[in-house]
Image (cartoon, rainbow, N blue to C red; front, side):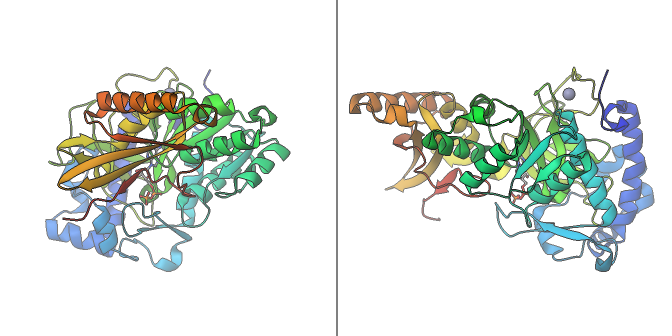
Amino acid sequence: MHHAFCPEEFWSQDTLRAVQSTRLQTIIEAAARSPFYGQRFAELGIRPEDIRSVDDIRNLPCTTKDDLRAAYPDKMLTLPVRQMARLHASSGTTGAATVVYYTHNDLAAWADLVARCMHMTGIRADDTFQNIAGYGLFTGGLGFHYGAERLGCLTIPAGAGNSKRQLKLLEDFRVTAVHIIPSYALHLASVMEEMDFDPKRLSLRIALIGAEPHTEAMRRRIEAFFGVRAYNSYGLSEMNGPGVAFECPEQNGMHLWEDAYIAEIIDPTTGDPVPEGQMGELVLTTLTREGMPLVRYRTRDLTRFLPGHCPCGRTHRRIDRISGRSDDMIILKGVNIYPMQVESVLMDIPEVGQNYLIVLEREGFLDQMRVKVEVKDEFFVEDMRALKALQQRIAAKLRDEILITPRVDLVESNSLPKSEGKAVRVQDLRPKQ
Ligand code: ADP
Ligand code: ZN
């Protein structure tokens, strides 16, 4: 017996493909009415009536972050700006912000999607939900807020930061479910350790974690510390925000909602689709957004489709956790390294605390990596020899994973800079060429 929030969750793959084909035609007709796509389609000789099925998507051009900037502020709108109800902007982690508009219908469809995700993890109307995310232009605030209200939860718009106040709200209102950025969850954990705040004082059972790359080891830490089940949440403002792909109770890959998005995975250098199941860049097309449809948007996020059916019975294909952005890759001494490789090593070492920072430096002509690692208080008081041994053990484990030996600095817990939003994991101090 499945407890579905909506029947779409269990539509067959055949139904999903058929729905995608119909919705794609509608969305391409709408897109062609926007100044940006109107011009682009005309230049490429694309006529909306030529797009008949989801397989024709390969004949359409991709849309990039640069296109969004070129279309700034409103050249991708299919309707007059007066008919838009809200706008959000990406947090600008990698460059200038880009803007996304929503009509009232778009906002309702988005709230439905987020509510579907939350329901899938087991959150119900009788849960009290605290949204520990920046409100304002960041979509993780209002996105989860309206999803939770749609589901019927008592919803606390806590916003980001101010750990002590977060804890007071969590405790006083017996909050059972939260949305929280994973790096902030660990920061909150270290604040609680410092305050001797026993996690058992909280009534939490579910945490929705996402908005930034994180490893399985990071999830396990969050689950163990707070005594919750933590579910991976994937989204991006260009695709509304949260609600694009989400983990089900199996916690094995994120169902990507194929009634609302068409997902492709391509080789980021050639643009060709990768063989089924291989890693590549996720490319997404909105199927239901009327105000500002996006066609084959290159997310720059790296993932793969997971093979096989999910035991939960949901039919929407699953993507693997995002291993990073294609532009996150560090090239050091000719070796390609992703920050998540470093995280997966660090978070498996019990002495390692809740935060770390990768610093890239140049000494003479040589690039060096320095990894600053917070150490849990109980280990930091030990003698120098023990710390030295820990430092060497961390360096050796990192070497096994990333093939170069970084310098390791051990620092006290809570001493590394903590951003209010998404964590900054890499600091590149190398002089620009
Ligand atoms: P910005 O691109 O400025 O960070 P967004 O707030 O739109 O603005 O962030 C979307 C991006 O955040 C995604 O493209 C992805 O790189 C990252 N992200 C979101 N959710 C996850 C997740 N669950 N795992 C890994 N990365 C994620
Ligand atoms: Zn599932």
